[in-house]
Length: 98
Image 1 (spheres, helix red, strand yellow):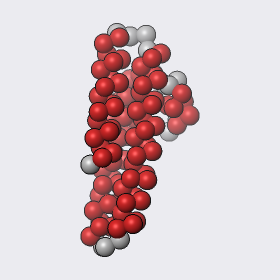
Image 2: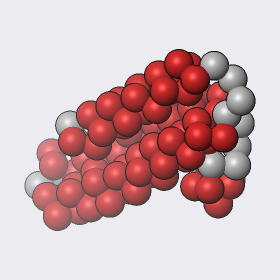
Image 3: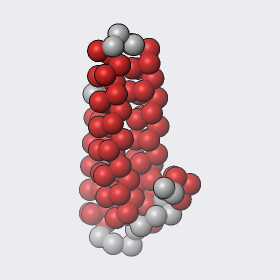
Image 4: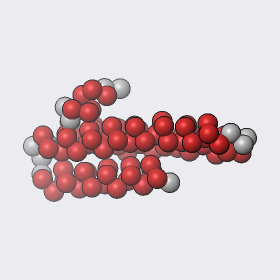
């Protein structure tokens, strides 16, 4: 993983979006959601909240910022860059609050 380069928007837009926002976002949020359910079922509510949000939300913020900044530097079509920004923002925000 390249968190520093992602955060600064130094990765190509396609990599930031597809690798970190889409694939990484789905993976991180699926794992933390599963752990959340397991911990809630075991009546470990504080641990569930920490795992469910303290792990996924920072990752989601990193991915959103990375896509946003990479879109700014992207030399491809502006419409594609803006679409990636919107999809990353909405998708990862929804994953963070559900």
